Amino acid sequence: MLFSSVRRPGFTLRRSALAASLGLAALAAQAQTLVPPAPSAATQRALQSVEAAAPVRQVLDDLRADHDRAIGELRTLVQIPAPPFKEQKRAEYFVARLRELGIADARIDAEGNAIGIRKGTGQGPKLVVSAHLDTVFPEGTDVTVKEREGRLYAPGISDDTRGLTVLLSWLKALNERKLQTVGDIVFVGNVGEEELGNLRGIKALFRDHPDIDGMVGLEPGTGETVLTQGTGSHRYDVAFKGPGGHSFGAFGQVPSAIHAMGRAIAHIGDVRTPSDPKTTFTVGKVGGGTSVNTIAGDANMAIDIRSNALPALLQTEKDIMAAIERGVAEENQRWSGPERIASARITSSAKLIGDRPAGATPTDSAIVQAAVASVALAGQKPALRGASTDANVPMSLGIPAVILGSGGKTGNFHALEEWFDPTDAWKGAQTALVTVLGLVGVQGVSEPLLARRPAPAAPSGAAR
Image (cartoon, rainbow, N blue to C red; front, top):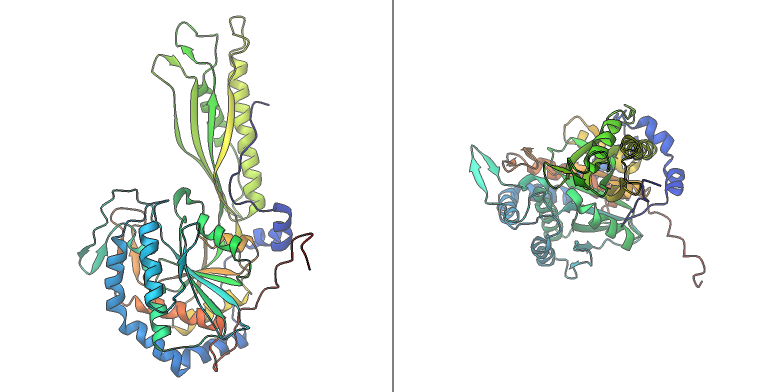
């Protein structure tokens, strides 16, 4: 076969089991209709009780009072470089702060995640609260903070350094006020969210901790938006190989790897995708060849395929792979005359370099309803959205997860002029924390809204 087998390293899901557990046909149908739910009366009462309780009010007031210190820590943290796959120094800082703030056994796990568990009273759910350590910026980028007209400018300052500082501010306030939750809160600064990090940190977290019941992640945002849809993606590096030759002397005898890639790209451009669920693709990078007067013996391209639902993602992937095969076959057929060297053929192979599973948290789930109710309590209009984030992983596993805004206006993500406006940013931090406290429950105030998941089944053949 001209198109070799596809290699899929790393995190792998059983697609049939996933489809069954998530009801992906239903998810696909609702993927574009992100309508905020009307929280149940019970959810609204629970969130109102949490938000109004005197101990919780003290914690929320402390978040406001802690604002200037938290912005100072944001300045410190963003100037610790954390390029993809080199997050170690920032992880060390984060785990040291977790320990200083009261989680003595906080640690860095084998994947590089900084983790600390704040224990509840017992019998409650285990909720992850997370923000990612890495930024998109390469090693050597100037990350010095600059201030202009009330805004702080620095690469990665909002995405996602702000989220990390909010987690630390939460922990500081909760422990100083000794607020006791029913469920456990797992504080995580995770690696590998950006670029080809491929969600490696969160994948490792959920692989190694099967007892997690839910996740609330923080990303840039003022606080009114709740992310409930995880856009999945597959990324491939496709290589084209042939014998190559002189542009004049070997003309007609050997096909060109670059021409084969060009034919493949033309056919990829003709692939049709559904508008709902939104599904996209692009050939984002190409390369190859030796010189202007050479029939290319090698070429390569990088492809990004995305969708809000796994079936559409897989179908588009299948269509693109067929388009590549067609392009290679046409190039080989084009140079099939009598002068053709019989063994001179183009072959292609694809390597999976990115695999972000698609998923969604149902809008009637407790975690979404709690987030929506919290936003409404804060006097804002809730909005739902979808994107590709760390939440893709738990969503794809059927574990309830949302992404909330960390507070503050932001802009120019992934650009050197990325900025953060700290004005009233504490409001978003308060809103997200009310959601978290409603989910895990507050001792003497409310029971957890987040249910504990059934214990994972023992492996086949395991001792009982």
